[in-house]
Length: 222
View 1 (spheres, one colour):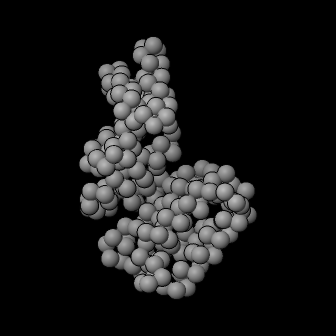
View 2 (cartoon, helix red, strand yellow):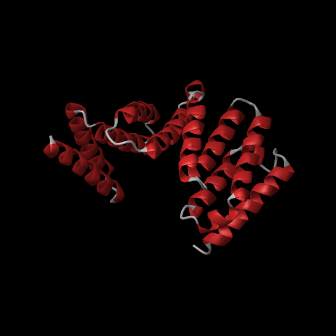
View 3 (cartoon, helix red, strand yellow):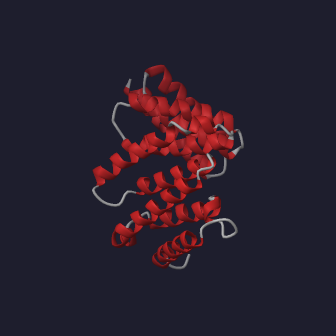
């Protein structure tokens, strides 16, 4: 069994290398071989990793429904994984939510938002400090509320996000994910209508711009 596990893990590693090298078709072949090994021998971590990788590739190719199916399969494998990895579920949930929005499946997004929020809070409790997933949970919640036409609730989530950054300002400045925080806020500022200068609340937009400026100052020149 160890030989098959090693084979599946190797296929996942090779798939990642092919993807990085700009050879997505070779990556797909390797991920599919890894998935077959995982399914045949009950290696749920390998099956999960392979389906996640295939789902990401499908999204890049614009095959959004295929991505949804693959990511749902990856998510279903998470509770069965031999060694628990709490961040794995959060990574997959975020990808799946994005894929569902691209297929206009807003009703399917609804149960995933509190699931992500709960898992992010648990991860924040474990770390005992700043948790990037908690920040992401506010962005996800704001996006969902706005999609449901609840702009006031969306604005509340954005304020909660900004308060999180302020509470952990010193830590975020030294945190290795400061660039990811900047990107998350930039995406939120670009995609949320409540942060659009033509439609949004002026004070909230100014607060978001201020936090973005702080993060960019710590990142420095690119």
